[in-house]
Length: 164
Image (tube, rainbow, N blue to C red):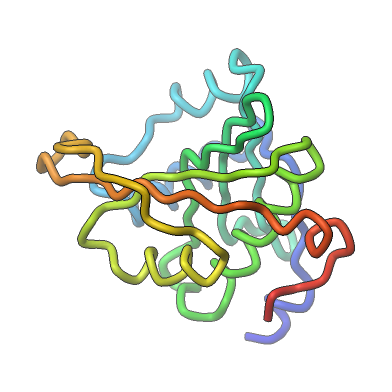
């Protein structure tokens, strides 16, 4: 598995990536985004910044965020199911934070299912703290979302220093 970790490329998502992204979406989420939603994000949303994580031309994961003023709002982040548990989520989140700083964000936010303790644990490692609840946020089962915020460590992220 070290070859995956050692040869990762991060790049902007393109329309050609959407089929691979949709496959990951369907593995990762009970209410996956559609191809049309991603197309709209890439072509019509001036605040959207989406990236893919790949090795040898294969998409391993992806993340998206909206950067508005000095805040970055993570819209989605996912790793292929067969590659989870290998630290790729850590690397992707850190790269997203680095990208947010590049676009002059100083804070980052996201919503996560209140029952998704694994994701919450990852986010806490990267400085996210709970700040509230969005009741019945998820339409598939009316589950609440935990709102989390992080102040970005701008100096560390600019130098490329990793948290781990």
